[in-house]
Structure formats: C-alpha cells, structure tokens
Length: 51
Length: 223
Image (cartoon, rainbow over all chains, first blue to last red; front, side, top):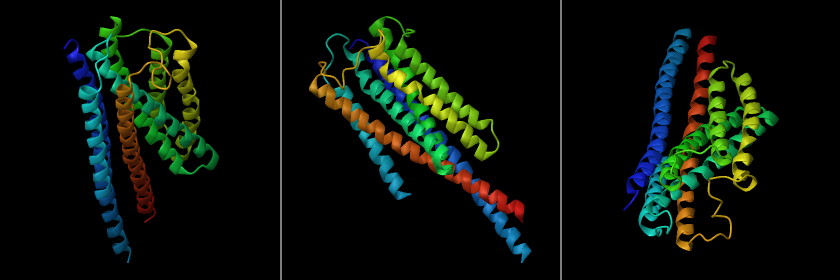
C-alpha cells in the first residue's frame, strides 16, 4: 500500500479544483441572476412611471 | 433546468465510475506501483485542458473573422475551463513525480511548456478584466488567444522533440499499455471531456447573462 496517500491526495486535489471552479461559476451566475431580476423590476417601474 | 440537472448527475456518475475503475479495476503497474494510478486523472486532465484551449482558439479565430460576441463568450468560457484542467495537471503531476522521480518538479520541456501555457491563459483572463469596452476587449483578447494557443502544439510535441524526464506517450502508440489500463484511461478521458463540456456550457451561460445585464443597463439609462 506504498504511496496510497499520494494517490488519494492527487484525486482529492483534482476533484477539489473541479468542484471549487464549478462552485465559483454557480455563485457568479446566482449573483448575476439577482442583479438581472433587480434591474428588470427597476425597468418595469420606470416604464410604468413613464406611462 | 431539469435537463442540466440530469446531465450534471450523469457526468458526476461517470466520474465516479472512472475513479472506481482507476482504483479497483486497473491493474497495479509493476515498476511504480500504486502511485501510477494518478495517471488516470493526470493524463486525461492534460488532454482535456488542451481540448478546451483548442475550443478557445476556435472561438478567438471565429470572433476575429465574424465579430459576433458569441464566439468571444465561447473563447473566454473554454479558456477558463482549460485553466481549471491545466491547474489539475500542474498539481497532480508533482504528487506523482515525487515518488516516481524523487523530486516534485523538473525544468524539462514538457513541464516548463505546460507551466508557461497555464501562465499565458491566466494572463489572457487577467487581460480581459483590464479592458472596459466589450468590443475592444473581445478583439484584443481574441488576438491574444490566438497567440497563446501557439504554445499548445509545443506542449503536445515536447516529449517527441526533446529529451524529457516526463514519460514518453503510451496511449496513442503501440507501446505496452495493458489493455485494461487503456480502457480505464479512455473511460477517465470520456468522463473529463463530458465534465469539460458541462463546465464550458455553464460558463457560457454566465456570459449570456452578463450580456443581458449590459443590455438592461443600457435600456435603463435610455429611460
């Protein structure tokens, strides 16, 4: 079982990088969705006021 | 949304199966022993990184030719995903190298050109944050993306062109890779390619949302 720790470390680090990257993309997407819905509301408000 | 969820689940399941095969199905290599199992993550990650950079290159060239923003979105999405895969290569390589070579790093052609490739694509991503105007940003980064891709054939060919400490290729040659090892390698490669496609798609959607946000901001300013 020599070097088993190295194998586990490599897989943990590798999968960790993919997971963290996926998480950052999801977080950025969630932030953008919030911003989009806020802007859509503002746009709706300003259109109604314009009428 | 459900479709993406199903695809994400399938990719995760495939990665799980590939990891199981790497740990329990593939035979233990005679010289290096257990540590050789890192090969099933390290080598496919490298090939997937190069594929992602190829997609980014196609996006950059297509943007230069057509000036359609969608190609720019594809170029940046694939570059970012490629950097993630290249990071895995640069981190798992030394973990394998220490027990196999007795040192974490060697400044040989393959390792150095891979590090340079990673640095170039990180520079590509940083460059994009420094230009405000979206059209100018897309054009400058498209040209930089084409230049950056020049290192990819260098990385790929380095083990043939120069004497390196990095092992010679065993997958696409008649060299003696055990048939079970070869199957496990292809399974790992397939799982990581599917993951790459999923991540590029997610990242591309982010660019679409950014574009929608810019359009809305312009509409609000016009009101």
